[in-house]
Length: 116
Image 1 (cartoon, rainbow, N blue to C red):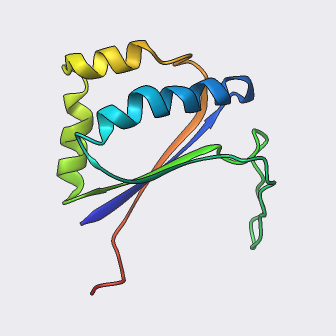
Image 2: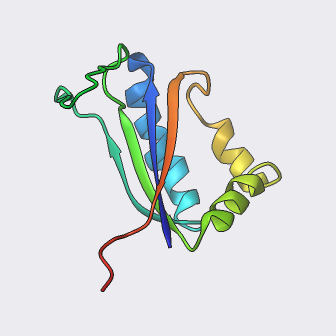
């Protein structure tokens, strides 16, 4: 199993409309296609940055984060590749409030170290 954590920084003026789109269109679609663990939106609390390389994003903290679970990376890649020809996804995406509002996208992959 792998977990994908996706962070999106979206132009601040589009955040509220983006969250509405996620609730009304993206999640109902995606929940039938992949195993979404959860989806989070920025709530206004400032980021805390610590460590040796203190880099604070000039775009504020990532404001959307979601986690999905897949059997393996190939399953994840197949899902994203399928979006190119999925007519249902085309309808979902056509309702997006502003596809150009993404400032930054980041996808990271993890395996669990908590084996039951």
